[in-house]
Length: 154
Image (cartoon, rainbow, N blue to C red; front, side, top):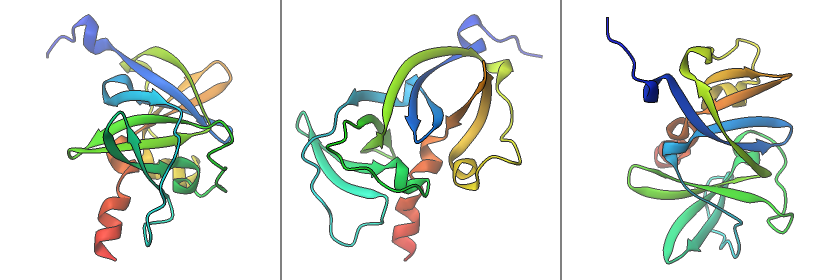
């Protein structure tokens, strides 16, 4: 039996909102938090790809989390925010409705994905944390960006 160090017992999450659902991305996966501006549309891109943007000289794919989760999109001018993440060496901006605080939560308190979780959320979740009257869905960044493989297969 291995003992966990104090560092491994807790995970810090950057929290964000999409619609009425709060989710958390492990802080180790978040490179930046920013307000997206000047998103350039990409012809024939999957519907959840809002386009590409330039963040301090780095081109990244902007992914609309509302569309990824089957919700109606908002206009970028509606004060949305983005979480900069990386997957397979590519940079992405996950466009969300709002970014919240950083929460440090015990690993032992993370539960499996509930069977009654909205299917779109269940597909991108790595688990959940029950908070005071709210459910925090832990986002699996790699699953969330699986549209890359779906687009290549099409």
